[in-house]
Length: 291
Picture 1: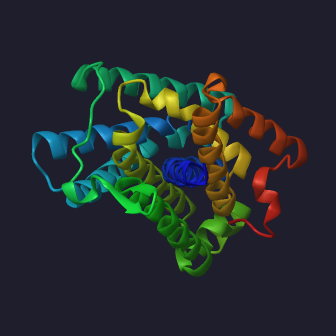
Picture 2: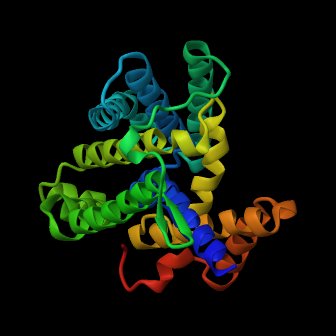
Picture 3: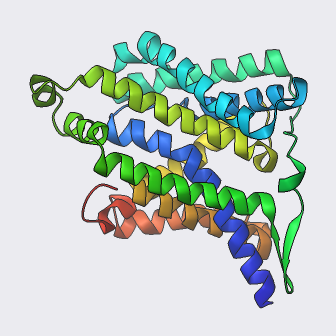
């Protein structure tokens, strides 16, 4: 019983790590930039599809393919941000939602056209297949890697935002764009880079998670809801809050589906309601400063 409980807990943490990698970009664009990007899941979806293409069709090694996919989607997002999103930065949230929802639907159509309606799988390198046996406990190597990447990314983002010049420019731009611009901060460029980083991370999450989450043209819409839940529970713009929300929801989702499958994903919505009842700003309010 205890072994099963620990196994479910570890699987939930690895699932939460995937949600964090995908959702942190949405937290950045919504919390730091104040832009409602409902097409965020599309960048994760294309990260998965590009990964399938490079590894499956062109036999790229796994690690170089991951790096190439992340950079390619980040660069593509710069074009989309400049041409499509930037004119709507000062628009109402309703207009932003309608625009990005339309972009998400278009992305699903593009994925259906080029890759078809069926699910795609990423070929995992042999070194990451199989499981580690720790007594009676069995841990998936791939899921352990996902958890390690999630924790490493949390540390990198915290250091980048709190201890670098670019992080200071982001915080200044968020606090007051006009004053930051007057002090010489290139606000538009800062937002463009922050958006690209967020979309690149979404692509990284999609590429890593395609094997576990499943990849089809509905991926963007399906995981948009989960990403929004993570951001709402964690608090938009909070790195710490987003991480702990992703872990909490990941464990709750896996545990509820394992122990009470008849409830499905019901538990994560219960958690969202409870958190917002007692912490209207999400887990962000547990931290003294934005994380």
